[in-house]
Length: 112
Image 1: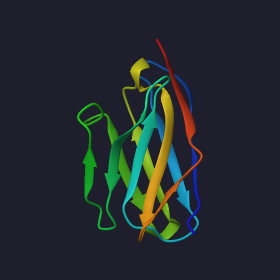
Image 2 (image 1 turned 135 degrees about the vertical axis):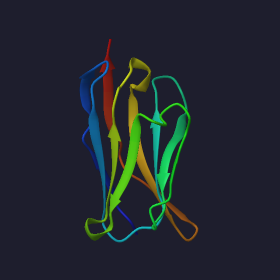
Image 3 (image 1 turned 30 degrees about the vertical axis):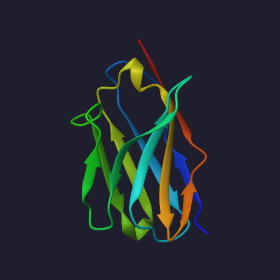
């Protein structure tokens, strides 16, 4: 059983920055960040492997940076140059064998 807890969301103006954290209850492998905008499905935005290999969708590449501190079982999502369209609930996700784990989400709201 893996528990994931996200934090760091909030209200920010266009062009601002936020850093989200995802703390796991145990060591974890690849971690993914997803987001769900109002009225839309949850979509993948970034991931980081245990060895630090990163992947981003084009919409956030160059603005968002994913990183991890394995000693703290924590993955971060640094978000810069935020735009109103980044407004969403952000979730972290990991898998262990056939099981998939999600955090409760953290709300990010970007005002114009």
